[in-house]
Amino acid sequence: MAIYSLAQRTTNLTITQACWELRTTASVRAVVLEIGFIMATGTATSIGLGRPAAQGVTPVNVTFLAEDGNGPAGNTVASLSWATSPTVPANFLRRWNGPATIGAGIVWTFPRGLIVPVSSSLVIWNITANVAADVWCVVDE
Amino acid sequence: MGSYSVAVRATNVASQLCCWELRTAAGVPALIFELGISIAGNSSNQIYVLARAPIRGITPTSPVTVLADDNNGPAGNTQVAIAWSGAPPALVASNYLRRLTPNVPSGVGSGIIWTFPIGLLVPPASSLALFTLSIASALDIWVNLDE
Image (tube, rainbow over all chains, first blue to last red; front, side, top):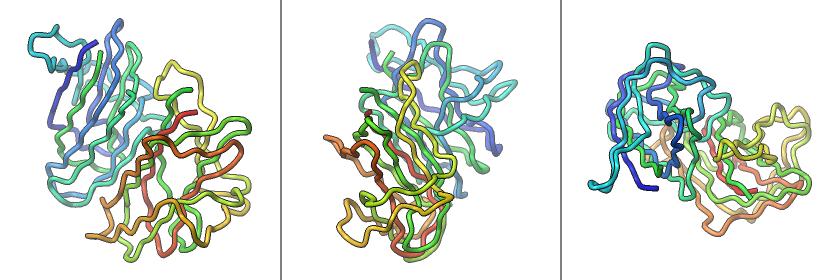
């Protein structure tokens, strides 16, 4: 196993939709170690982290980057947009409220790993109307 | 043992009441490693305390079971509740495990992540609760535990 990271600027600000989706491949699960969310706009917001009831359809994927520059390419991907958005998690693993302040944010750590099985997803969900935000994630795969 | 998490929005804003209760099942203790609070309202003078409830809440309304951090793992047993059709957990008057006064700078977005590196044990069939000592606001609260 090896460590991979990816940072992106979210663009989907629509309420009750995902703004970020981590997706595993059919053969490689991901163990999430850290997720960071930093607001880029000064508007109060509320987000949740959870496993979507259904994955997004036709995602625009970006592959995670190896933290060992000589390591093999990653398998896990993340998406900010879809033809059909992921659907809402039944319950959230984490929730957070952001003030109307650029630069506010949260770093969730999972020292023992949050496991995303093969062919599944983890999403950051816009519980209220969201703002553009910088999101990063560290996984072991 | 496995790792489990869940996050909910607590909505009880009354003073001197419980706004969140973690309830262990009979025969299954919970070992808490992290408890996070994110304030969702701008009420002033908010104070929250974490304590072991001497009397559990009666008939919790739609309690939520913790979710496995390994999605292929067994279902969780511990539940969290934010409302009760009977009495809420009895208020603890003193001797708290943690306190939080989040009114700096103000309300929304304030919060804290309490960590328990060697685990905070909640025995079977008992409760750990977050109480409001003064006017509260809605808040998001998550917990990570082993059971």
